[in-house]
Length: 454
Image (cartoon, rainbow, N blue to C red):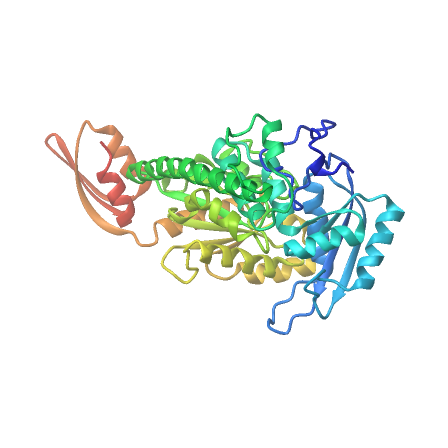
């Protein structure tokens, strides 16, 4: 493999790779092209401080999917039992030797470790295995770097990646910036290369935060404008690959990218939908969550994820056919809590138990028992089973707190009259000269939306 210190251009074979996150420290996968042979290692650490422990085999399958998301060629995998994590290498010396031998046998150039590695552990593992090493955080950052499509998404990923790099910068970085045109900064007299690199990263991060601050303000203005519009907002959230985008497409008739792929959606998408008794609502598809989602990514994507915070209803889409569905649910709830959404709070949260088409008779029975709980529905976004039930549940939830209100509307104001007909239950209507008096059962939120109609 080419040493990142050599300053040679990145490989151009295969799919074009984004360059903004390849800064030459130990954690990046610069020089790793499509189809690079990789090992996936899952350290199964015995923890005594928690009752929740993910199945190692399920973790391995997810780690392989993460590696496949950037089209690495996974040539071998290992689950390593770790009773006493080593400060220098995380795993034992014998396990490091076994990985080195496996890499030599398979020709693997990259080792993916499904866990968090300190800079020291990462460096020592690279030396001990004679391969490039990347941990779970670095891998997720790489995937986000591949998938970010909008300027905001690219800024968010670059900021997160630079924050990750800053703590483990040990080799040259500025020559790569000169290679790409550079930011126009050079180290002052007496600065070491590492000091220069760290200063450049800090300055770049400051500019990114300023740019993201402008984007966040713009998004905030857009949210405030949407709040003034007479339409409720429903946000789809859930674990990555739970089927959110497929359900989004089913509900809206859109064609958002929906594949059996982790993090297929990064940038939020919004579309209008009709619901029983509600002529128009806004549906938002958001980035998927994952276990051990790097805190820096949660922070960088806060402006994007806040779309879910401002929604009238949150629909938590779950892959009910996944063996780790309960653990995934906990991960989503944890991230929502980190963003300030309390599952026990006042905001309605509906559980959409997706992928019913993949259940056998036994697991379907258990899923139906879960779906019998309030605010839950079993469905298949692929076949359409249960989707109409979800529509009704969303509508019923939006109108659950409806009360009877009186309105006086101009007889010729067809727009406002039609809105009341479509978004509430008209109990009484009486024409009085050039006006129409109505008694309508409608929620306080929809009443406020109606009053905001120009």
